[in-house]
Length: 306
Ligand SMILES: [Zn+2]
Image 1 (cartoon, helix red, strand yellow):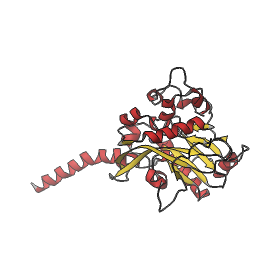
Image 2 (image 1 turned 90 degrees about the vertical axis):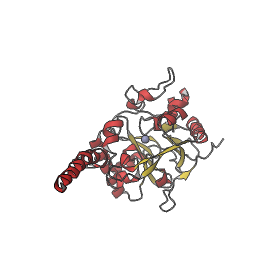
Image 3 (image 1 turned 135 degrees about the vertical axis):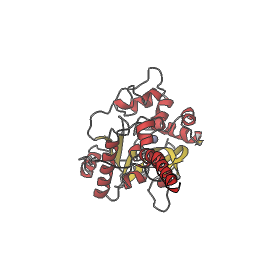
């Protein structure tokens, strides 16, 4: 009887444990190798365009939800993590700011099950996009590109620098409510990093989505930031080389996992080449506002100068 019972327990453990391991914990990076791009190249590009680089990084949080850590950091545990939806403004002394990511509309927040939505914060992001020299998007998901598309202003869309995968029809851009006739033309192309403004470099990194890119910024005072988008949703992703769970990455929001791992290793390599580089994860609000380990990111967009 006991033996039978033990066998039953073992059977149940395997029956339930195997899918649990595969879907939520499995974190084997496989053979993915870091990309050949170096910090020296990124710095050279950041210095390539004449003019003032941005002087600081500001943050707005529009919405948040709390979800089990394992979903976004495979093997991190089931304890819930705060997943913030954020946008960043990089003011430029004597010039126009760069905005990175755009928040999302209130209906989109409801659809995504956000626990809270801050209309004023989204209004500040919208104003920032209207005044900005350019808006960049880390990838074509609703909680990053949605604010820009929902704002729907042709002049803002015309100044945004987007790549083809962030615009053309695919399973993600279908969810973006493009205004009639206002879908912009792509103005970023190719697979090599490219300077888009003084101190600002876009690094194409198709992986989490086809249009995923990271943004390297070297501020006028020399501080360096890397906006990782959802290649590293949390700091733990790149620090521990952990991708998101297969449950999310294979099923709910399919990504090319091997490429995500390759970029996570690339981020690690850059951090070794430039220990002061601040990696800005896609949704890790608590990391960004930490007082224990300050990131240098300022909470709240400064109002337009004029
Ligand atoms: Zn995201």
